[in-house]
Amino acid sequence: MSTLSWIILASFTGGVLSLLLAAMLTLKTRPSWVSKLVSFAIGALLGAAFLNTLPEAFELSENPNQVTVLVLVGILLFFILEKLVLWRHCHIEDCEVHDPSAAITAADGHPHHQTHEHDHGRSGMMIMVGDTFHNFVDGILIAAAFMVDIQLGIITSIAIIAHEIPQEAGDFIILLNSGYTRSSAFMMNLLSSFATLVGGVLAYFMLNTLDFLILPLLSLASASMIYVALSDLIPGLHKRPEIGATVQQVSLILLGIGMIWFVGLFAHGH
Image (cartoon, rainbow, N blue to C red):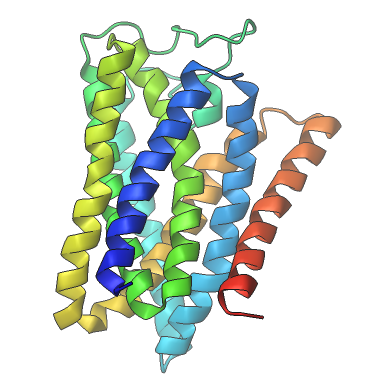
């Protein structure tokens, strides 16, 4: 397949697959699976960043300091962007926008409706705007990875899908708590997921003529994965400090890293 075909396939399949799995987790299965998936997503993100995208960025760069500076700038940039999103969205003390595992905490296994009281859809609309932008950026990062190497693109796509599932599950809960029906929440998330495809296709044609952007985009992709894992996902795991939960979390993180490492070995034919 051509590089563009891979980008379209990964962007479309990734967006739809993560949405369907998130819907199943949120509406059909036990809430405990969401928190387990968060741990696995952390490992996948860190593995993709440190084992794949960063090494590729260093190979493309003649000056390693350029990559590290870009990663540092990227982490600060994502911090600022997240602050803006939280400032616009959170109107209460305990905000669950970026804590997917906290969005499903009812003892009886059903989503609770205490955090976001019915607000005529305002909270849901805000999270959809932020999620659409996030998906668009994911598409750009997928395209940049595929344009460097098909194997890198596949690994990057897997990592993005892994962290999108718990995030989409959290979005479902926020939409339901905001007053949307299950069908409308699903349709809104589906439309938002197409932003990944749009971002990937646009980036492909842009990067064909602006190939010097591939290095900074790989660096920003690494920064995004590291920031999401360490800032947005790991703090939620600390809410369960007991030994059994910690062992389970570490095991799932290692499983996520191991999966990325194995996919990398298999993709490169080692």
